[in-house]
Length: 510
Image (cartoon, rainbow, N blue to C red; front, side, top):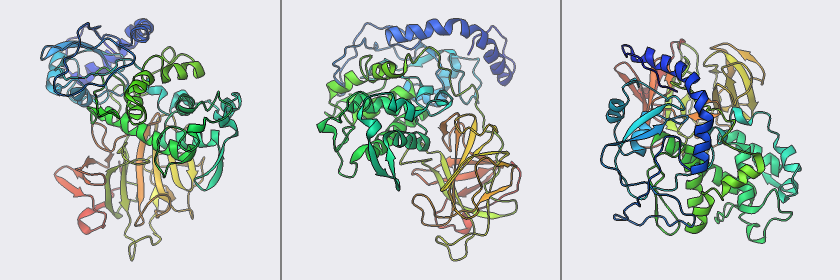
């Protein structure tokens, strides 16, 4: 949130000054910028090009809903961009086919060690043309994709019951119990940290869950249209769909997604100005719909209209959920001081399959290996309150309000039932919260799985906000579960075999 006329002597200090100044300046223009974005389908600051994109080098995705295409910009041409929530320099370099050095040279007020950029900050980006940029229309803001602050107070069951659709009477045996439609939605929203409102909009758009009294005949087995034998019913359809949404969302966040294919093999390259939530929905629909149906689904007349019809305007009252220069609070290892545990899993999924690679694994020295009980406790990695304690899971809320959708939280998985701490308990750094085990999910040996969220968004275990535990910083490998923890000149490599080279000793202080 910028811009002020300041002579730069200390980039870190100036970045903070600019942010505070911009909070005042941008509030005055935010409403008009948002309205402009909604009316034109372009982000604030984006140009409205008239040229068409050359089609050499592949086949572009067809569009049933026409939109104005981006021009073939001159190499290195500076284009206007307004930073979106959660943006990082690393991701922007991929989207605009440029380099971090060129972005910094064009925006000298940005410090080289910036993490997340200020939402609303005007920038100039040196762009290099890439073919087949897709629809620039923003479907939904990122803060409404995440199960974060904007979802507090929403009652899924009450909302479903207010509508005549089949979902309110739907019951399915899922995850060890009979669950009604609203409970299934809440289960997915809680575990994947995806907005329950968005899940409901998806169910309505694909199979009329809130407005049609009967499920369409063609949707009986595969309500969302994902026709795979092991994904019958609402629960398993959502299991696949929400996982796919997270894969698209967090891959765009990190700059790991450049193109994807539609069902006919045509290329879809997300528009460089796009936001993560929109790309996530584009990625999902690319796997479900024909090219023409895909083009409609991601347009103003698609799921965006369904969401607005159900929940109202998306752009007017939403606040960014990732602030400028987000930094991890000091954290210690999840085991006691002077204990030596094995680093058994580098960056891998926080929940589900694939993205977000938000988690690390640590295993105690268990006699005999395997899933034998451990005598060493898992501890609180910082002061806080236990926001949730479910079978195999504990959520530590660091801001102390007991709400896991706000502020920093630590998610622990594979916590044994015996000795697991109760929800609502206040803890100090180092207090025991339970014991590592094989309970919950797939596990071949006793260990604890830890991940972080901020305002409901999973934070990748590596990258600009990498896990930092007592000065040990996580780095990913070529594959999930691979990677290192590095402190000064010493590196420890993750090993599922808990061998001596993977052991790390806690010093007990962040």
